[in-house]
Amino acid sequence: MKTFKQFINEVGNKPARWKWTKSNASVYQAEFRIGDKGGYKMEIKFHSQDEEIPFWSVHFEYIADIVGVGTYRDTGTGNSLQVFATVLDILKTFIAKEKPKAITFSGKDGRQKIYARILKYIKGYEMYKEKIKGSEVGFTLMRGRVRPPEVKK
Image 1 (tube, rainbow, N blue to C red):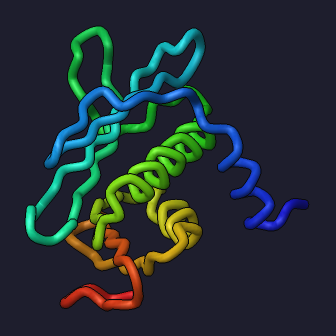
Image 2 (image 1 turned 45 degrees about the horizontal axis):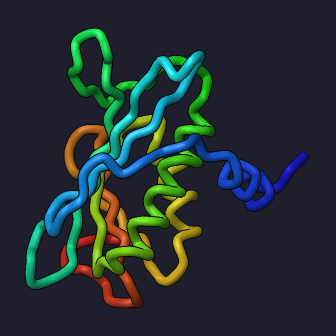
Image 3 (image 1 turned 180 degrees about the vertical axis):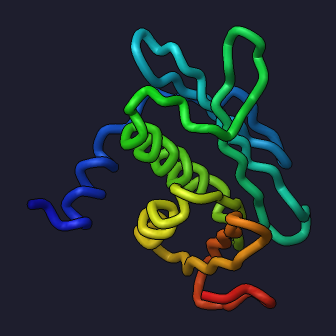
């Protein structure tokens, strides 16, 4: 049986092809397709929260091509590992390009543990999490060892 580190390394080596579709001082957007014949479009959006401090929020969405509306639900394709590998690849590329002080996003049941495990592999950043409401948890990646206010590790 593979260790988690071996598993995550294998997952991290198989991202889908992706591309930046929007890039400016306050918004970055990347997209990729997952599933049979690229049937599911996924988008990741990075929004600058403060021009003075490099602080960004991240949103992941599955876009239903039929109606063009984003959702945060699972695609049901069985390609979750490739989705996570691609998101990690985009996140690392974004970090190398922008060198943000902090990145925040949230997750609900079922994804929180894998988010926490994957984020531990982002070098140079500390991961903190806090319960937001219900089953939702907020994640913050902070560059260096500066602990953000009101966020528990």
